Figure 1 (cartoon, rainbow, N blue to C red):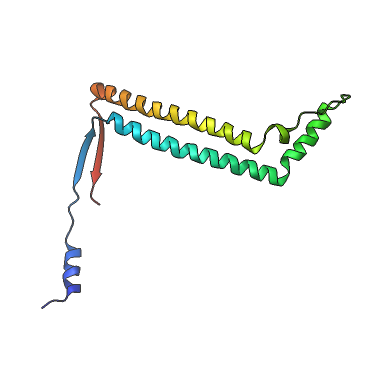
Figure 2 (cartoon, rainbow, N blue to C red):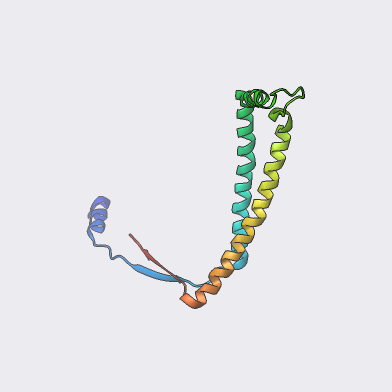
Length: 139
């Protein structure tokens, strides 16, 4: 009787024939593309809002806004007795977060529409070109 190790050694010595498969992508489902592009756009929108809030908090905690306010007051107060423009007062965390949320919602709408348009254009172009040829192997 041969051991399991010898049987495995004999199996590994057999040449493995590589199989190649060629497929044509001739149709992309419209609703699947819309759903996928919507999910990708939502995830990118969440990333946009979170990163905007984090960047704002870092800039606020390091004192960048105060230094910019000082620089702007030096530039704009050349003889004026009025209080100059203040970045820290006009751009609060709520304002910046609300603006980034609105931009994220607009990106979701535009991204979903672009995904739908892309699938429609691909399905129309397949009629002219015959589709996208993709090859696969098993090694």
